[in-house]
Image (tube, rainbow, N blue to C red; front, side, top):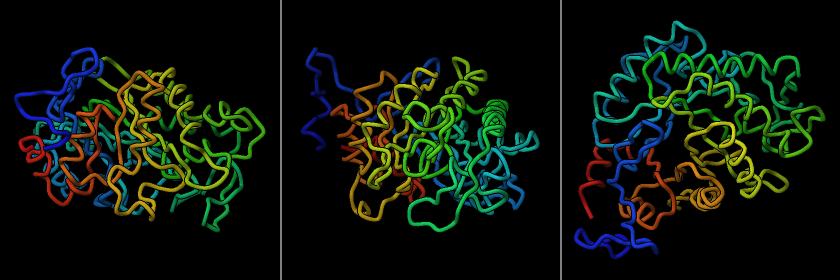
Length: 343
């Protein structure tokens, strides 16, 4: 029994109000998330070679959405060919992508979940086109040297993200998640380890966050009460001299000011699954809890959650508003339904 709570005796806050549970809906603007289980963007690499959505993509998301999860975030979709991360990654870089993405959004809605789509630029981690980053500095542990993104091309990057968000909205999703984690382009700009710029996009924490803030501000032109802007924030580089959770908490405040509706907290240059955290559930929850104290928007806790009791307790103890469950749901799409029905 998670946290010693029973069905007939809900936990109360210090103010005497019932504490939230995993089953509770969460309203964000006019979007109602049916429960607190959040399926994060898990890369499947099932798209066609040109990034077009396939039947396999649609079926994968249909299965997850039908299992009781409240929100489903579609895996990272590249906003520009130069920002592609893998050969069979879904694209959102052209208007021709919209009909295929609409099939995924419709399948998720049919399963009873809220559909959100992540948009990304892999930056120095791209496999195609130009390898760009904030500076000509390799990522930790890598030898490939990226090209420093010219200042004159930054507006094109912002426009690529904005157009991707527009396409996501046209495809019928309830929101777009902007990828600012895992050593992708926006995450690279946050990091003092690889951002050595001396222009308006480097040199201070605020300047290193400027590109992400501009992307969010541009994305908000397409936001409505029923279309959310989510940001996946890499909150810890995991390397000496890199972005720290406290530094990420300040970035989170700037992102909220720019118009982000929900923050999903993950790793930064260290990636989504640091090797030393392989057997730890909720390994990015400490960073999420720190950031949650600094913002007023919902925060998603991320990191290898597989135990329903852990997910329930995280919500009942008010650690985060939403719990991300990724690979456990891929392995067993009925995981969410059982978690919601059991104690």
